[in-house]
Image (cartoon, rainbow, N blue to C red; front, top):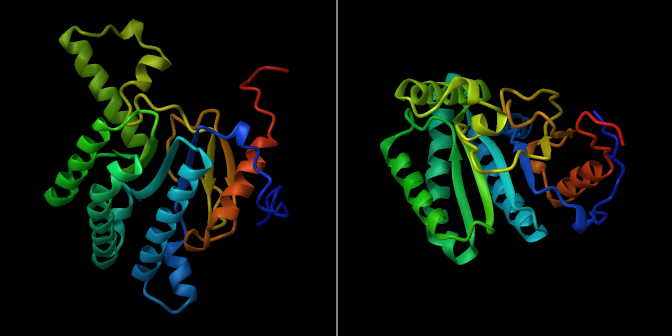
Length: 250
């Protein structure tokens, strides 16, 4: 599948018009491994390294927020071996992040329902939250969607709002989109201007359903482990060539 800027080369990014927030559906790890005769777990390991590389590049480029879809509410349906491998990689990443966040000025947040996640991983995630709170809000921030689903996020937000109404601290008639956004996992973070999906799939897969209302979408055939800095550049160039009217007329 080609996109409108598949022929563009890297190095054409206008750094004065960067999206503030990029979101990526990290898709294609399993297919990448299968094509090489490797177990799917090898694809997730390669994908984790790609995330590290792309996050560093986005930070250096000047992007303020990067949100990645790491594990959905539906991914529990996968084999126990595959889920276990993903959680082991997450533990490794969190331990490394705890050692480097302050040094590298990188904030880290988790979106999703962390309840089913192991107590060990929840404790590590809590530790990264505490480090994040000590860092400057202008620093680069990576958001990891873990046990996340867009519909689930909206439902959890509705329940929190309903509880506040029942407690008398909120009034239903006062709810607007700004107030509701404050109940989402992404509260306080601008909506993504650009959402990227590698692997040739042309769907959102329950990702940031509220936040994507006016996002620009970019699709590429590259599988996530093969995704590189040039792919990010091409996606940003495509974004910068879009005419964003937000329902109005220029």
